[in-house]
Image (tube, rainbow, N blue to C red; front, side, top):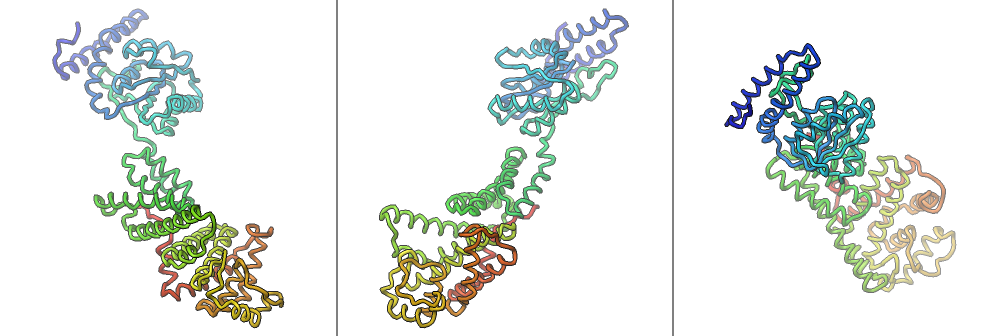
Length: 504
């Protein structure tokens, strides 16, 4: 007798229960009786079970699945129920040599056509092979976003391998559970089956991955942290937190690499995102850091504008425009942004133990300080025009006071290009406001030591003590320059320091 005359779900469930009891109590003392019980199950129970199960469980499925991977053991029923509830666009069965025979009833009850399914043969005792097979299917399918893995069937090794691979590829993990499993019959009581969704390991253990990423942020390893946050962004239920943290990593990674336009673009999107999310959630991650992030976004924008101005001029004139360079070096916002980009980068490299790179950045900052003060006097170090500087008087001062810094030799002409040390000599000769803070002898020693460095002209590697001494010399000159402008190094450093978000 069919069940189509039953008009509602409770009536169908009651009928299924009645048939289930008859099947459960069926005599099984002989092979013939056991065969009859199995035939009754497939003929009278399975179609009704499918109807009841899909009607009850299908509404719980809230997405469309482009693919589904299932491990097949000796019980075909869970796979049928799972496939019909999720209704994936295509299916892959992982079968052993022994379990392949149970594929036929799965195809029969699901109605799958050959173009919609494939079969991969696996070893029932090798979880790593299962793991590899699922990864290969995932790759062959083009790494779809919505994919499910059902690990109900098969051996424990097959289930374990399926679960491992499903977690790695970010699949929806499902299995068919039962509230009344009949151990003696090795089947659930019909109608006790239900669909279970297993939270992604990233949802359960994502905090461990996130903690690892925060540790990387504290070490300025933005590339590695970004990869973790981007991966979590695809896995966790609410991706907003990971999205802004990955944006922070992208921005700071680019800034660390002196890719200023990319840093500006990513930081702009970050600030806009945090503003948006914080409007709905006041304690949203980085909401308390918005003032600093907005300051840094503005500083990067200033850098980009001046860099683009110089690049445009160079493209149009095909040569150096000393007037523009002097003009740019007198733009205080630009100079401060560039100086603290170099200085804070050097401090981060020093903290990481990358002392040679730190010294290279400090050397560039030392050179920039002299360039900025020389620009006040109208001089471009790359092509100086001394007409505004009383050249003869300047040359005379150099010879009368600083000849010893030229090996005791007379300065016959002013240089056509101004090196770092010569720049400070000129500033001292011109009695620049910065000159009083310049110890030329110490400066020359530090510059000469730098010239032996592997990143300059030599084969030496800088040590921690030497790097610290060089940094202190640069800091003294930086503070002297800032004092002329009425600025404080420590206040500016706090604004330019990379934000290290706190987990909440």
